[in-house]
Length: 274
Image (cartoon, rainbow, N blue to C red; front, side, top):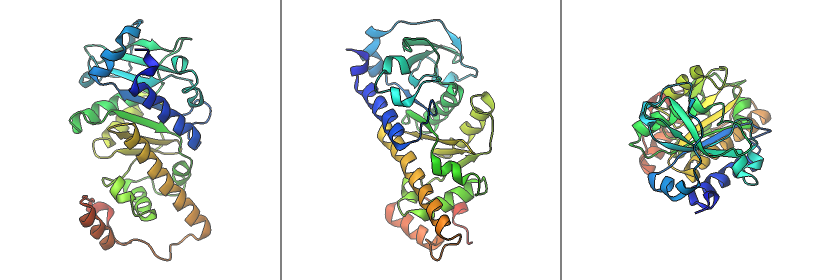
């Protein structure tokens, strides 16, 4: 099978293009990674041309021998659907979880996303806490979330509660809430460590003044999560632009009623009285 004809590659390309069309990926902004299933690896193995091993920059022993499809560093999301062989690569992780090698893609040279340590550390956490169900990590420069990081307290409590109040579906879509990482230099191990700590509890982490990280089981659920959070942020930005204070909103007791009817568990730390 031709590599780009595989269903998982097509799904990856579609998600990247959807993000571009939302306006979340100016220039080479954002990155996407997918932990490939064993049977998917075998379906495209005939296309592999393994290159030299390279250091990841961190240690992810829980991902030893796994394969990932990832966007390339400096590559534009708008080109993923047009030139996937130049914009993407599949990588293999070594037995120690400390090195990777490209086995397909980036035909014109380059390396995986500069935020590969963050992606892999988050994949390792999510693989562990979800019994392997989660396979997608997505980072996008979502406009309204970034705007809110300049005006809301940089806490999980502030972001979760404000965004939950903006649309009734939000507590159902992200019932565990949203974590927040204060501004840090992107691309290194330090921000990867802080984000992976939050991913033990949340499926979404806001990077202050930068964007969002989201994790999910598949492309649709992960994109849908990012889309829902960003739409809620857009509503909040518009509401604050019209009037700084809410005239009415969803109350803690109403959130509890919603949780009962939709069979979700909402942490009480977000249901405080204002």
